[in-house]
Length: 180
Picture 1 (cartoon, one colour):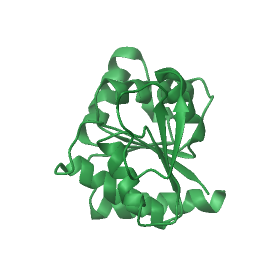
Picture 2 (cartoon, helix red, strand yellow):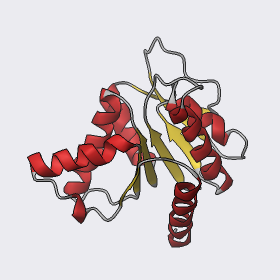
Picture 3 (cartoon, rainbow, N blue to C red):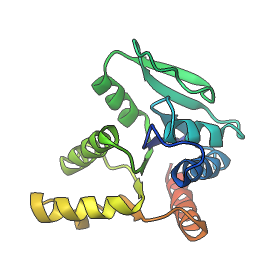
């Protein structure tokens, strides 16, 4: 089965729009047969595992070996990483497609790693950015760090995640599944 890695805010609560959008995204992905992979803890990670729990797909959490944080209860499998950077490498290696919701410094690190590997032609995986801040960040990078996102055909930006965006992402994912 193809695997979708979902990155994002580990602190958002189930009452937030971001959490609810991550649930909806995972429902879409689960219905399409994508296994869900995430960092295994709360917030967007929990939301994505929760949304996919309605379907017969794996919900994998890549968690830290000696973390005091408890992985979320919606996972079907846990993979233990010895360090944060090992965890990031596992997450990136496991995915056929990436989704980024807005988050904090951890999400920014994950986004930067994908961008750096893409720039070096190491990965070419469809990557979806959901939220208003991503376009602003990439415009900042373009204007201040000579990063030309026009060359990144695999990067897709959506300011919101509503019916129109869900339909467009669904169509793009169907194309990905046909290619596999």
